[in-house]
Length: 205
Image (cartoon, rainbow, N blue to C red; front, side):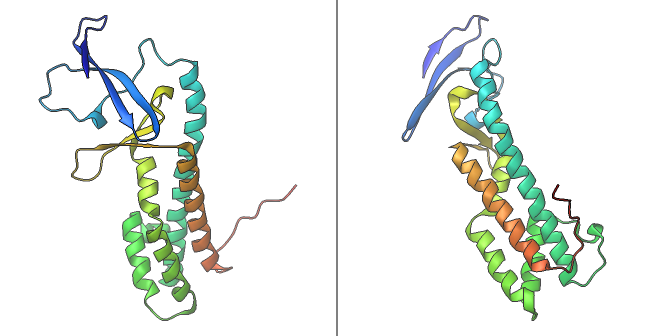
């Protein structure tokens, strides 16, 4: 890290972060002195002079992938609620299962341990979701601060509960996999409903 003086007169450092098997990330980092400790994950990320054409092109690739994971996560939570209502033999009101992902998962695990045809298959599906870290995949996309500039690859800052934060660097292919697995999970849960939940079927033409 080498010290430099940016045009606005504030002290800044040239920072290089080396990544295994990838191009290093290089940027200037200002240190105002108002905060005694700094975690790189908490930085505000920008570009001098504003975003350039490469940044806009990068965002056109990044944003749809973040959106796909977000949509898939919503499908999963809706499927969990439908299935839980059906297994509990409750009314069809989602307000009765207004729970977080973790709470819904816990309740479905309890239901899967009871006797009943679809419950046995449910246990395997829930374990598949755990093995593939699907909640973690969703959270790491939805609850991240994304570095939306071309020079830093696919990087996000992630702040876990009661932790200071960490930077995560991946690929567009990683995000594609996240979305595909989440949609697959939602479909597995929906398939357990069979025809015991109402559908809206759009016309083909």
